[in-house]
Figure 1 (cartoon, rainbow, N blue to C red):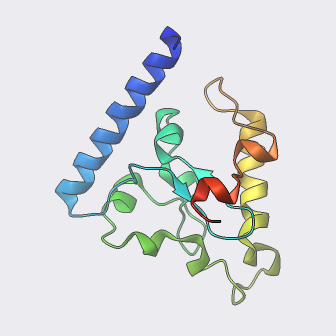
Figure 2: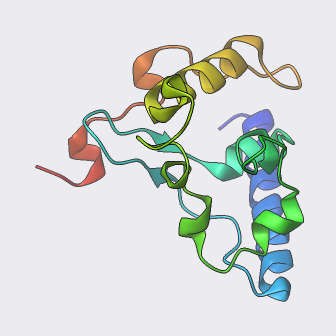
Length: 140
């Protein structure tokens, strides 16, 4: 492992520990320690820790019903993580039909950010950079 990679992983671990401590003090669920794997035909593996190590605020993805970014402290204090699931609002009842489909939302938000980059780091830009095979998910 290269020195730069080691530093990134150490920062990632420290960030996760710090955010988990803040959330624990607030009584919230905190940031997931393990990557999240979405449901559906083409599951996506999302690692909050990697995104936080790049100093991307939680509100970049998690927003309120008026589309204002939620504050990191408010998100980390949530006691039921399901409250933060996109499908709670982005579903067949959502007023803007284009924003009803999580796939469309993620493809716009994630692909744009991955192409432009953050703090000099770009994310994966090919499908298999985020999407995983179902076997990795533990199915089949």
